[in-house]
Length: 482
Image 1 (cartoon, rainbow, N blue to C red):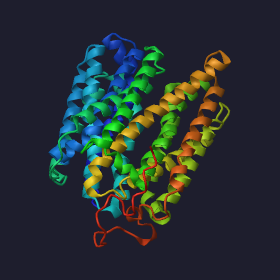
Image 2: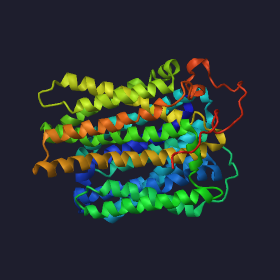
Image 3: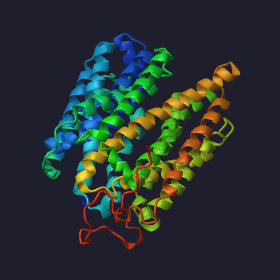
Image 4: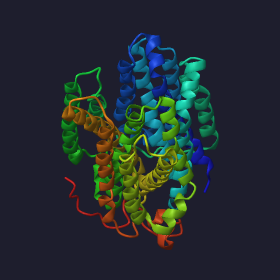
């Protein structure tokens, strides 16, 4: 497998993940400098998520219309311009708008980068390619907090955004030099009503879930925007049934493998998305640790994730998608449930070991479920599948944080006091159950599901195999998801 392509594309993932973790560390300093509060400045984080939700659905159409390579380079450029705008912002409004501009670039970088990878990689190499794509991306959360804290403490918060400039320039040059030229595919006219409806639906849900427990805004605002997003989703479903070229091709969900990967993976992410929110809070509020001490504990999960990538392809080739994803979701959920037994008296070596194992299993699961989503999707449909998977990922992560925050809020209302350690324990038990439920979507898969990608059972999916390019290699199941 040519490792150059996924590593170049990983520049986008690295910048995006690095940026999101760095800014979280520097929020108090940024807020003090531009004359606002750290809580109010969290609206800037939300504006980035809203921008992603609005523009991710159109990323596949943009790639078909203008060429995936061209859109990928342009997306990096927009992200860099947004980073510069963040660095020179001197007010809350300017910073929020700058983060929205960054989100426009991020909405195209990751989905279109993944689309370039899929179109340029034989299916039998897809698991390994996904591995190489995500290894550098995992470095972002690993080095983001200490780098952000160091830059903000000893230099200035402005530099946490300006470091994206040289990285982005290098990424654009490498993409121009090494990525294969992708031709336009004669995209149909843009589904403008679908773009508006999907934008309202996704952004309403993501924004509402992100701010429903934000102290700066009344909860009714979050609840109302979620309701608007859900209503727009229903209207879009009706629109997609009659539109000749819907922006999000929901007909792909007739494919059992694609449906299981997207829905099961999203359910798993709901539980996993809650962990980065719950674990640092428990260590700081429940254990009394400093932010630096909690960070030195939680970063072990990222180390485990990076280490697992080195053997992921072999695991899926030996056991197949179905078996690995079933047991992977259950074991990972079990490790989350174990977090609910942590107390200040728990030995740190034991805690670190459990976090390391959890990082291993989650990394393997995510690589597998990302590859499985495209295992039985034809090349012509990859641009339709990519925005769907990306939208579901964003919504599920936002939902995970909202559910975790809601559980803690209910616990404090129940016992009528501030957060205590047992509140976090309850939250971990419940989100672990949500992640474990993802296994139900993989139990019904055939044993050979995605074998052309995993190589399990000796099937490699190499070009010599004569199979018609259909959306699925098995007959489409009736659509019972309505």
